[in-house]
Image (cartoon, rainbow, N blue to C red; front, side):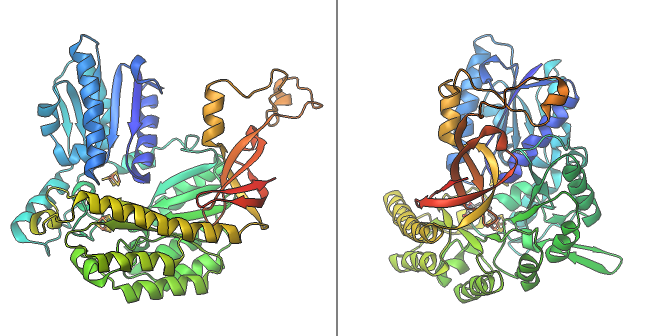
Length: 496
Ligand code: SAH
Ligand code: SF4
Ligand code: F3S
């Protein structure tokens, strides 16, 4: 059975898809990148903004139409939107066979088999998450559902194939699930359930297995990753302790973590970033707004002053740190003055990059229930453009300062441009020889007098700066020292 799995949304979904792929392969299914030739179409979805959901509806429209036209197809919706809409998806798109929430992904293989056998729509949702939605709507915002989740997704992480990851030599590792912050605009706590930290020994074991399989960079994932806390036998392990534990894993070269929440940020984490050589000097720490009034309305539990202090502390404790941010523009009632405070925060924080989003009202969230989405779309668009322009100027200045430096990059592979060219079959010279690492042992003959063809590669520094340079494709997954010779706002250009 050929399965096509497309991923939308955040890194958590990228990891989930990777784990689901391992599971499906183990069950004897074959993965394909070509939706047209697949017999099973799966979409791992995101609900964070309206736009993300619309994209899924249009994919499902296409898939269901093909099925209605007589093609034998199993169609599945996985992830956050599956959790949010549940059975409604089957009603809206006739032809959908599988609806599986993020806490139930360990059951996807079994659900595909059942659906193929014609056993009706398969629905698996996280009941703790559904309960939490009900409790919040009946008892108001202060209610938290700490009930044990019945999800079986732990199974996925524990059974991952250490040889498969999203980029050569790199892997995502989930250290916690869910979120308890309930920012008023955000759907994530409703679809991903309560915050739960994984036991440190389990994480250590997973990272050891990955390192043993050749992974040198791990990115620890959590919605509020700095809230990681695991208590056992009267001892509490926080993120700083976990970093120290992982520092000892042999073979590992880089440890990163995303995404940080600015409230309750333990300064010991900054110290760990400074002291532990494997921990990357990179912080993704979204502010969402620079205005205290908007931060309060968003339910973010920090003030502008506290945020500024944290950024100052980060720059002081971790010299050379790369900091990235997120902003929402057009939050209900956002004035020009509030907006100007966000622009000011971009300049003050000197982010290396920011992700900027137009506010999108999410059904069921506190903001959707209590606030009017009153900033007109063209104002949101304008503020989005303006903030991007502010960020671009800050990024360009920061990147220009890096020219002349030699930096270590972990090579991801071909740059998007080179990737496109190579898909068209354009660049490889006819006399080019592939130099496989150590492949002479396997009887391959290659001519060392012909250098491998150089292509445009992309890699990242320890501060998460993107560097493009020419080199051999088989550097993917390796480390290279690159001298920065030019810079734009988005990219550094270098020479090996
Ligand atoms: N846990 C992370 C964010 C996860 S969602 C954190 O707290 O920083 C990723 C980003 O999407 C958020 O940082 C926010 O900027 C944006 N986002 C979330 N909900 C949104 C909404 N309703 N409208 C527009 N952007 C939103
Ligand atoms: Fe959403 Fe806020 Fe949780 Fe981030 S911290 S996932 S923005 S509720
Ligand atoms: Fe989207 Fe779910 Fe991630 S809503 S941002 S895929 S946690």
